[in-house]
Image 1 (cartoon, rainbow, N blue to C red):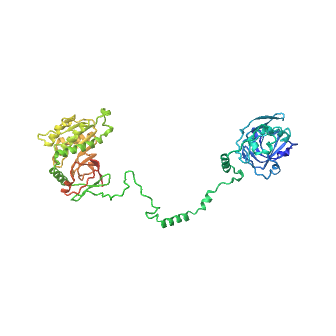
Image 2 (image 1 turned 45 degrees about the vertical axis):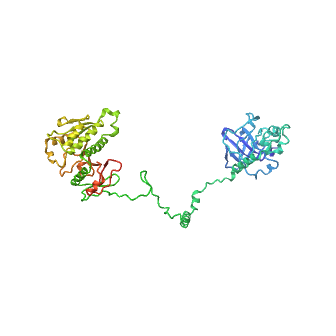
Image 3 (image 1 turned 90 degrees about the horizontal axis):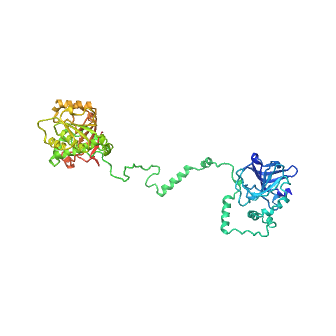
Length: 508
């Protein structure tokens, strides 16, 4: 009777307080109305105790998940505990308040607690409805519902001998799965068919296993193999490969010579470019000789003035803000430049620069004192400047009292030192210092005494003079002197300008 169900795998729902227990039936006591499960699982987690016992009053629902075959109930204690999972379609028993069992046949699913996935080869989901109050798990009660249970394919496949007597006469025998399905089943069994008891409880010891690896011996073996096979012939792997910047060439080239300009006399001061090329300074006499030889070869004064004006205006436009300020959408903020020029070639260079600035929509105010006789170069430059929108003044009273954006200084000339004692010169220096605008000097001379106007930038022509700190930051412009002209005056010259016409110089 009740002992016939020993070894069956059941699921017992004890309500929300106690939860769901699953296990194999080890004992059924009809007198005390109790049932015991061995190797139990509580809410899908294996219990620490080997056996638990339940009273009929605590059980709200009981489901039989697997019925042992003939003879299996005698040796259920030696059989390994199968993995328990959610039940399929079957019958459930509900315990009413008066203790009588109520049979409810409906599809069931585990909703009270998570459970483990059943093993494909061992567990077949089937539910048998029983009442704990009517001789718990009696065989006669189950026989009455065996016909309904025989409709399950898994039940007939697992217990063919049991279902053969109770199968419906019109029920057809299920077809066997084909080779393809059999192969898939075998693969599933290989992947998911391991018993949960075989899974080790202890964590893998990564540190201990790593200690067993002799890294020194392995690297020595690799080292020996590479030496014998010649894979190290091109270098040692331990050496880090050379890394290049985005602006460096990875192809091997000749070593860079940073000193490519030499002068025939002792250099008092040297400069260097952003690329590291050394640019020596030249004396005023050598610079004057260089311009004279260039003029004999066709680089006339007019060409030199034009080239100087273009380079100086490009530098001034950059200092004024470049495209951020000089654009059609910003016409209300036109920059103002004050040009202070003397009656000499240096002044003619400044007038040429002012003409180009005025052509670029810069408000230019040119100061040039009145003289009875002017140089031809100054007269020609003034004639061109008068065709622009620039303003020419000869009195310092006409200069703006408010600060301007830039002051260009072209007052000094080494051949006309006496001009420094003129009243207009001193008044122009005082105005520039009072205006507090940044000053750009074009081709400034070298003086033993300090100039009255300290420049923030200075622009040298061709090769720089040994300018002092009063000249500010030095820039060098290319005025188009050919290389053979440099060689004729004894200068070994290689252009340091690269792709630009104006480059900054730094003290070496």
